[in-house]
Amino acid sequence: MDLNWLAVLAAAVSAFLIGGLWYGPLFNHAWCREAGIDMHAKPAHPGRVFGTAFLAALVAAIAFAWWLGPAPELEYAVRHGVLAGFGIAAMSFGINYAFAGRSFKLWLIDGGYHTLQFAVYGMILGLWH
Image 1 (tube, rainbow, N blue to C red):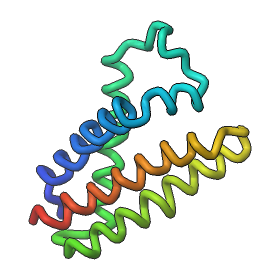
Image 2 (image 1 turned 60 degrees about the horizontal axis):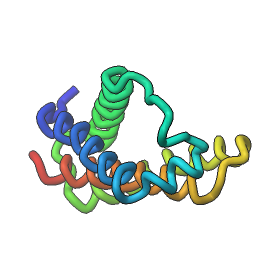
Image 3 (image 1 turned 135 degrees about the vertical axis):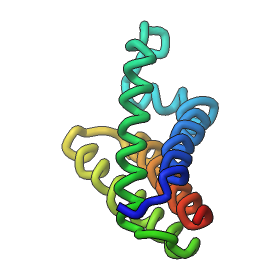
Image 4 (image 1 turned 90 degrees about the vertical axis):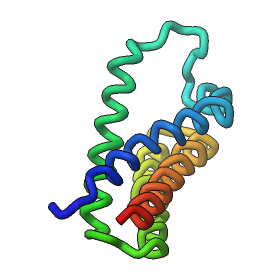
């Protein structure tokens, strides 16, 4: 695989920065309410949660970088990021959420995060050659 591994790693780290804002100050209360999560309950061990999330973000960044190919043009990479985030990730969530009876608001929050996540992946991979 001819990948820019530093750019891939930066893309994976960006998912944490975006997620920290998205699921923190921007949508924390709405997301917890819609997901049925008690904000006052004792959370799972953060090392396990963050480790799993980082591994998943890294695998997604590797797969996306491989899909784009080496040295993609910025516009191409961002467009494909939006396509991957909205057209694949968010719509896959939509299928699951429809069958699980989850709210449209929860889908907007989660689907919006993944759309932004992959658009930023595309921006990083499109700029860093």
